[in-house]
Image (tube, rainbow, N blue to C red):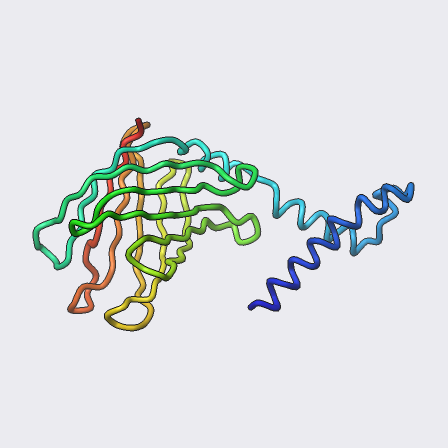
Length: 201
């Protein structure tokens, strides 16, 4: 995987370096080889933000959070409050979310990123927080109404291995988003684990 990533970075760097070099030598873009043109066009297309990235940017801002979490099906929900800040990064390509809250009486901080991959045609997200040293990675889709469905996994410290969950989010008003997370309970059956209501300030 590391070699694959390194190869992609080297190829991208070579393509990006080639164009200015050719221009400095007085050569036109049309004098690039067909392979160089194809590579240049592929990377330009893959790296250009589009409508999905604009949709992500529209959600940037500051939010108040109402958080509910469950540890067993049908059990009482733990309720917490918090705040979130969403900003765009990398030239409006990635939505960055920073959360401040509390969890089980302890201070809690989370950091997430979400983007849209032009190559795969799917959204992706990552999540890290102050209660773990790992990362949750997810992939999914969003429709025209910005209703999103994701599937992701993280390494559970109790099971000592990966656990898969599904997430869903929807906007119930122009300023309110509801996020839900479902994962396996102690009996292995799916249960609702978390619900977060985001209210834009």
